[in-house]
Amino acid sequence: MARIRVVTDSASDLPEEYARRLNIDVVSLSIRFGDEEFTDRVDLTPDVFWAKCKVSKTLPETSAPSAGTFQAVYERAKAEGYDGVIVLTLSSMLSASHQAAALGADAVTSEIDVRVVDTLNVSMGQGLIAIEVAELAATGASLEELVARAQSVMTKAGVVAAIDTLEHLIKGGRIGGARALLGQVLSIKPLIELKNGVVAEAGRQRTRAKALAAVAKAAASHAPLRRLALIHGACTSGDVTTLESLVKDIVVEFPVIVTDIGPVVGTHGGPGIIGLTWISQ
Image 1 (cartoon, rainbow, N blue to C red):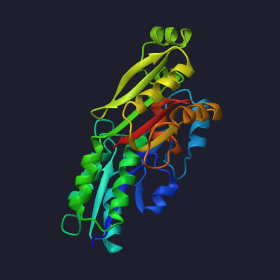
Image 2 (image 1 turned 90 degrees about the horizontal axis):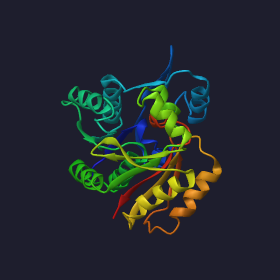
Image 3 (image 1 turned 90 degrees about the vertical axis):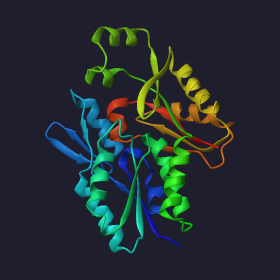
Image 4 (image 1 turned 45 degrees about the vertical axis):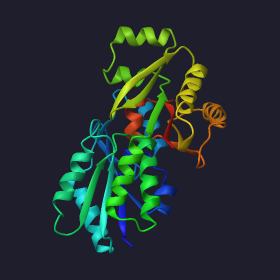
């Protein structure tokens, strides 16, 4: 039986209990507020992040882990007796994390076999892929089998979310001021999805309730599902409960995971972002 260490990055929004139980090593991205720099999920929790966003005049900035950080993770896996490493990074279209992971792997080719997989995903779309691969790794599967599983489920993974406020888009200069103001006046709630590793608009709704219903409908259109996760950032309990009720009848093989969106995704989505990620059967 092979001993393969599964590694992902903190853009996966993987809940700590899953990372711990499945022995997944999570490499943190960095978040910078002005001159202050924080390590995602280590010294910057989602709650603290959202609180800082409220008082910040500009958007925080995110930066990928260094190649050396990934290299240290691989070397630790070797020291702990692992036969290989599979790394499941967030989309290379959204971050330099994949490149850093690959450079780190190049530095240890003589020590341990490392395979770096670009999931073309983010948040729990990426996290569900990591869970799927880690559960297979626990059975003693080979590195080749794990890479094949990752590549297979990537084609069945999806992400859709509703944005509650255009404030972060305005701060980030990603939308013209007049258009943004018009959107706020009309209470337009944009929907976003991931297509080929990049964020794309998935429609617009006039109310929060309709936006939540559209998110649920998007996930349901891919049912039956193998895995499903509800992700949210600084949302009201009412929104979370509503979306949970909307997906309760979707056929899912495993229990629905409800988890916070962390600083990496939250930086761009803004408070109130809520969505679903899934792997279809």
